[in-house]
Length: 217
Image (cartoon, rainbow, N blue to C red; front, side, top):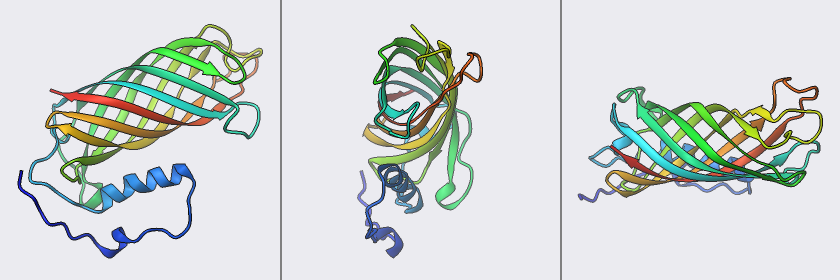
């Protein structure tokens, strides 16, 4: 592979002097990778229209249900995902990228903290914007997702519901291990609530770290 010398703008080389919260640091990294355009000659497979994206993943999240403490409740989940790149490249500058539709199947859903329950669910709608600015090993994305989860008992505990909706939003980076394979590190805001299906409708709000591995066809 041909090696290129990259000259980045001064703004991209400067490091912030103040320590920012973890969510801000992760989102800043995603923005940095997108706004400092270091291009190789060949686009990654996820940049091409019609690419099939298959992956396995696991995720951990922590958040609050009844208090303002993000250590109140924890959730571990795992599953498989399928996606399809819908468009070619669109946009300009750091915004240039393409749109991918994906879905998750989640057979593993376990909670700790206020209660211990298990369940499963799915995200039938995931809209992901894959940025095509990249280095030879790294590219980035942003995404929005919506789905639902069914648990063995009401979640959160009380007169609530065992069926809850699970909107999420965030982004991440692909670490390319091979031409058609990548490791995925994602960071998301996560929300769980029953939309008034139960008598009470408390909310879980938290942050999620997700790790995945992708194969592209």
